[in-house]
Length: 127
Picture 1 (spheres, rainbow, N blue to C red):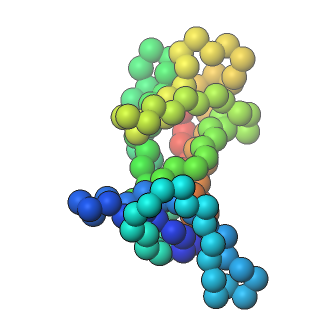
Picture 2: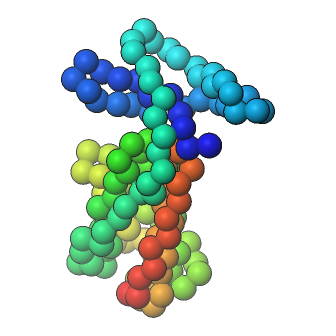
């Protein structure tokens, strides 16, 4: 289910807390570790990504999610896994230029993204 508990700050900011729904979907429980205000929000939009650049043997993507936040990511090039690093402050994913174990940055590629609410998106690229 895409509805979860979020912590709400005084200035309107929201932070994903999560939660587990019971079998019939009428109650949610969450592990709350602090006092504050909490609300239920429904996240139905998948994460987004944009290829920013391909310089110096490195790919850089700007990623984002409107509500629950990015939970996982995976880059496949020609069906083979390529290591990505995530920079939280800049909301970017990037390959490591010196990575000699992964496939070369050529050919068909897929960037798989998922947010904490379970929304998924696959972005197809031709490098």
